[in-house]
Image (cartoon, rainbow, N blue to C red; front, side, top):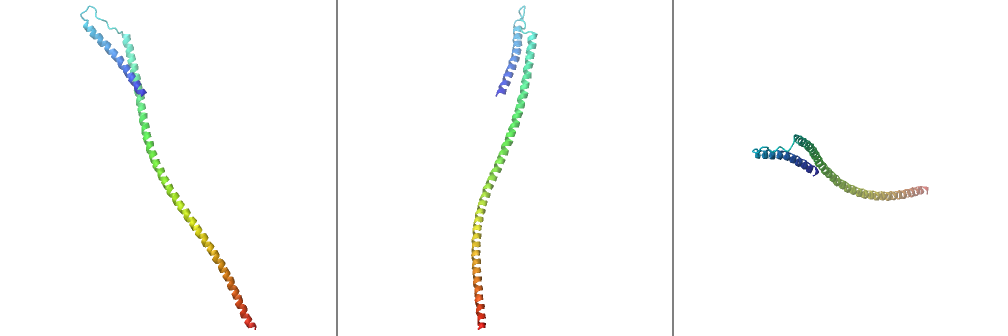
Length: 166
């Protein structure tokens, strides 16, 4: 944008200076040839001081153009470097995006597995409590039967001893 227009204006200015220099000399030469038959030919209207000034101006413009070309070259190199960096960044972002997507997918799987395991644990815990309750009931029943058997044993022993007592 701005750099290109500046380079173009410098180039145009340099071209116009060179064109003026060449056109003036050419027109002077042509005019001089046409007037050779006259007693006093038309003199060159540019003085050596003007030529030197124009030459200096041309050199300054060339130097400025060269500086602008170097600056443009550096900007292009910077732009190319940054473009490569952007491409690499985009590739990294795509890779990271794929990794994040895979991690999210795995996270969903793990959460589902975790939920199933919790549900299984709750069912197992409920079964364990039911078994524990059943075992406690059976233990109580065994104790009461043991107590009954013990009483019966006592009765039988008492009866047997009472038979001998007679």
